[in-house]
Length: 393
Image (cartoon, rainbow, N blue to C red; front, side, top):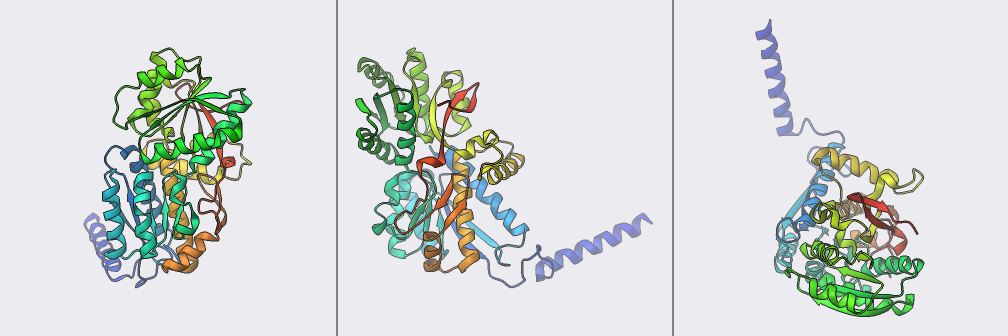
């Protein structure tokens, strides 16, 4: 009897495998013979920014699997073509060229970093293929007249600075010092910190820069104290943002609040900084604080669904950066579903998208705004007991 059962199951297995091969058995809703819809992706999966790009890759792959298990996009399987730029802007440009010329994708998500995104802007503009960047610099999408094919989902540095300055004003802080990395991300943040300071009644008393591979920020922090600033803003990604926190703590400067950019939005930074990060303040997207949001918040449902799925699949917490990939890929999929794999139609669809509820806010794109977010899409967060907490106003 058992031998007969084994034979029946073996036969059924062969039938199913053959069915897959000839297209008789498909995930629900996926139609045999329909061409896959391609989406290209470039992330910093390895290199110095790997802690940003790795969750982006994992998130994109998870979404691809979810969509295909649910029938694809109007019956078309979603084919995700991912390249690793190794945290190198030059390699990012090569990857984008390959996606356009060889893979012939109709839309690209990424790159991870501002430098890389700025490097690929002229490539996608010339090829007229829409790009949804996952990086922060406002220069990626401005001026819009010269960025017709470029969109981005990370909150712009001007929004982060605006939120930060609002909070400082509420706390009676008006004299600050800024420390920025000599990278595209750091330079863009520095420009906005200096440009917006007068508008918010903030005076910048110290303005220090450092290299992205520097290993000691004591000199910059000491100058902040000598300038008698009321708060310090550090703007970087990677090891230097943890270095700033540890130096601030080692120099016993806790009486001068330390603010970080949104680049600090990964719990891996909290692990690396340890107790030194207690009390650090920063504006963050709500994807990082989903459980702390009221149930009535319009983003709560999508944030918690993503958080639970990601943490169950990968056994690690979500971050701002995985949220970038979630927003970028879902926007691309929404466009493919609405207009198909036509780059020009995808561009037009994205530019007119309103009320898209994502991980980083509620996006309202327009011909004048290819980011679609504002400072109201951010929360002020403080590090408390090794985790994020909503900062009291």
